[in-house]
Image 1 (tube, rainbow, N blue to C red):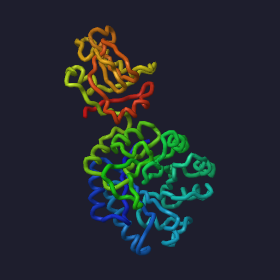
Image 2: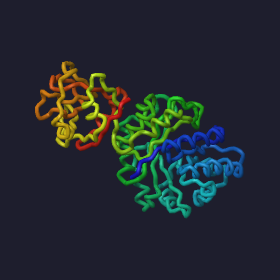
Image 3: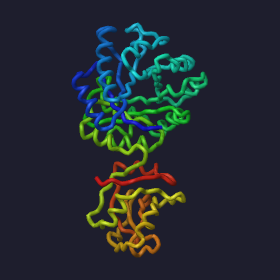
Image 4: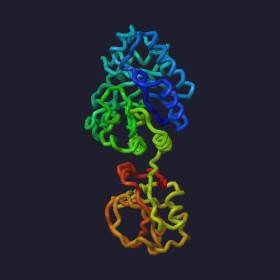
Amino acid sequence: MRRRLGISIYPDHSDPARDRAYLELAARHGFERIFMSMLEVSGGRDATVTKFGDVISFAHDLGYEVVLDVAPNIFEELGVSYDDLGFFHELGADGIRLDTGFDGRREAMLTYNPYGLAIELNMSSDVAYVDNIASYQANLPFLYGCHNFYPQEGTGLPFDFFVGCSRRFKEKGLRTAAFVSCAGGTLGPWPVNDGLPTLEMHRHLPADVAAKHLFATGLIDDVIIGNAYASADELAAVGAVDRYQTRFSVELLPTASELERAIVLDEQHERRGDISERVIRSTDVRVKYRAEANPAHDNDVELQPGDIVVGNDAFGNYKNELQVVLEPHRDARKNLVGKIVPEELVLLPFIKPWSKFRFAER
């Protein structure tokens, strides 16, 4: 399934002109979907149609898919029935995220709405909710899953729980989404805003690193920045994330040779299938560069997790093999050439047998 990036906007708390500028900037960096909060409305039905309809139309012109986050009180305030989603079609929405659950049968029926609106479910409960809906023969291509975000420090999901929740949806082939937080964003649905991530471990991580982590799990298709407004630099960094393989940010040593720089930065790496606990081995490079001399340097230190090494001339057949260190050890046949940046060490467990990965210099 094609992976996408998204942003969030809050029309009931924001300035329309600033929202439009934000949408344009994010689109230039490859963002393709919008989480649009509609948890509260003001001014009645006509005013709501104008406010939300205008920004949705603008977003569509930029190529976005728009999913509205709706609460039950919105249906009551606007006189909308779950049996007729025509109002959201009139707004131009591509889908609605249900802020509450029903009996399974109703959600399944909603996926057959005549407007082709996607029905997005809350993914952040590790119960058989989606199994129940699927048992009512839901129209699965129109059923999405999206985790919650958590504005209060200390209330985001723990990773293992997140994995259990996400697998329930991913195993059914549904499109899945989760949120990361930008550093400077102050806008969300509630006055409390300590960031808006799904995972608590992401709350103080750079948004691009958190996005890499979500994609690396293989459980999330759409990564959405939960709070607004991400800076231009943050949008550029998240937009540059490789959505299909882990691309580690690295700091290379000044002593790394041009050969070693080429081995690290220019090659597609693949972990051997017969893995070891000590290192991640990328062995094709030693074949490609077998004729190239590689004198020893920086080879008398204790290597630490995240260190990147290349075999030197003393390593025989393993000369110019690239390895990423997983366990501390010493080996004078290996040149230390660089290090994965500390905040991205969290990505190492996702480099499985035969995983593809690359490096980019920070």
